[in-house]
Amino acid sequence: MIALVEAARAGLLKRQHLGRNVIAGVIVGVVALPLAMAFAIASGLKPEQGLYTAIIGGLAVSLFGGSRVQIAGPTGAFIVILAGVTAEHGVEGLLLATLMAGVILILLGAARLGAVIRFIPNPVVVGFTAGIGVIIWVGQWKDFLGLPTASSGAFHETLLNLLQSLPDLHPVTTALGTLSLLLTLYGPRLPGMARIPGPLIAMSVATALQWSMNFEGVATIDSAFGGIPQGLPTPDIPVISYDRLVSLVPAALTIAMLGAIESLLSAVVADGMAGTRHDPNQELIGQGVANMLTPLFGGFAATGAIARTATSLRNGANSPVAGIVHTLTLLSVLLLLAPLAAAVPLCALAAILFVVAWNMANVGHFIRLIRTAPRSDVIILLITFILTITTDLVVAVNVGVILAMLLFMRRMAAAVEIVSTSDTSPSNAMLPDQTSTLPREVLIFTIEGPFFFAAVEHLERALRETGADPRCMVIRLHQVPFVDITGIQALDDAIHNLEQRGVVVLLSEARSNVLRKLIRGGLLRRHGLRRRHFRQFENAIRTARRAHSTPTAQRSSTDA
Image 1 (cartoon, rainbow, N blue to C red):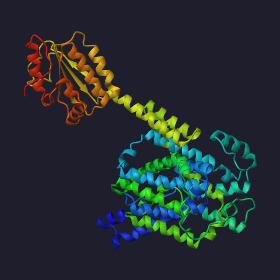
Image 2 (cartoon, rainbow, N blue to C red; image 1 turned 45 degrees about the vertical axis):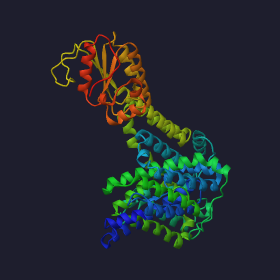
Image 3 (cartoon, rainbow, N blue to C red; image 1 turned 60 degrees about the horizontal axis):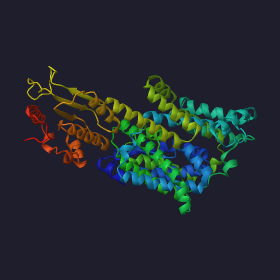
Image 4 (cartoon, helix red, strand yellow; image 1 turned 90 degrees about the vertical axis):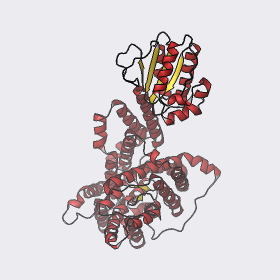
């Protein structure tokens, strides 16, 4: 009850706030009704399983999540993954994979990795969400147009089969689907309909027409699934075996990672709209609890839903009460109105998913990124998008993230500079008194930027370009924010080689975190460099002057 406790402490459970949250919860519950059934059908499941997911998952996230205003349930981003898992492992396999994903999410939250997951680059997120939108759009042609069953297989094979089947479309189904699409988009603009969600208008009108006219050949929930049972099922634990657990690990990891990404993105959007601040780790734990509970009732993966959360906020929500009322609204519909859902045409739900797919693809933002983003980011965006469509989401996200990491390391390495200063430089602003000049045969290197494995080449090249060995070399580290073991090893090798040639080497002004790593790496112990060398650059300069006046260079050792 963490979210409720925090809301109570903030005074949001008082009477003056309850009314607006109840209204927002009812509205978002109505919005979630057709979406929950549509997402379930598109994932290869029964429509009532989408309602179970929205009810159980939404309640768990509202109670245990890290955002006071998050609305959770089934989302379009999961359709591609869940449909693939269902096709390969069956419904039981999907339920077990969802339960496993819940455990993974809880572990991620307990390990406090919530902030890290949000660092997935924007081109990767935009690329795979746009790819999912395209797959959902193509996947709904069959129900929207009343086409024969599309062949399973690769995306291009399914698309080709659907194109070849276009002459066999069902005219009435297509007309009813087109009407549903128009009502989804423009229904709220009709007189008196401004407060009613477009998907609900479309589903209600299409259902009323089908129920009254009984069009022949139009697929409905009754003809496809035998209607929707009233009430929640009794809890049932999925069958668990070692072999099934092992085979479902990749699917569980994918569900967990996508759920984490989408829920945290939704929480960030909610923070921007409501002026709140969510706890990313507690949000992951709440999502994990939700995904452990929903499979027990026949539900599947649930996560934070950006559109429904935004709808709730726009209607005045500011506490978990809205999320709780949203689940109670869906439960009431399931208990009281389930028999009426038998006449819902599948083409109406497909029309609703067309709009969901368009919003997911975010075509305007996608094109804007292609036009304005750096070329390397555009390449990552397009690769992720193409791989999402042609292979699967796991490959697309993994490749996109790896490419983004390599690009980041390349940029970081390019930002590192090794600046050298010799005694011939008349403007030596780095000297302590601002007036002296360095002794002859003394060289100063300043490392600017993070010194990690990708930047080691800069130091090696700078040392090669020095020409004749100086009598003393000072390496300034005050502009190094961090160093890794490869950087430490490069410094170790450079100091060893220079000392073998009689060059006195001093390290200066390392930050505390860099100093700790150098000490842990044993660099100071091996080369006799004392800790106080890192304290003040003035001490290094004095030692450099003494080394210049000493006929024989000796290993670094300085007075305090």
